[in-house]
Image (cartoon, rainbow, N blue to C red):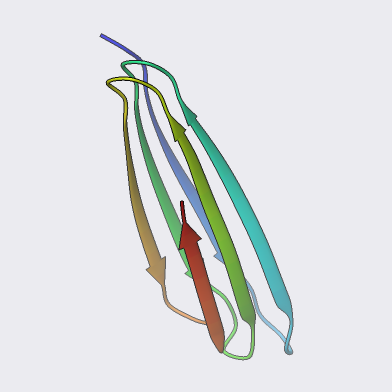
Length: 79
C-alpha cells in the first residue's frame, strides 16, 4: 500500500481588475494516489491563468478537479 494525498487549492479575489498566474507541480511516487482540487473564485474583472503538471510513477494515480466560479478570463492547463 502506498501513500495518498489530497490537496485543495483555493483562489479568492476581489477589487479592481488584476491578473493571477498560478502553477502547481505534482510528483506521484510509485504506488501512490494524489487528488488535486482547485477552486477559483476570482473577482468578476480578474484574469486567472493556471497550470498544473504531474509526474506519475508506476502504479500511481492522479486525479484533477477544477472548479471555476469567477473571473473575466480564466484558463487552466493540465499536463
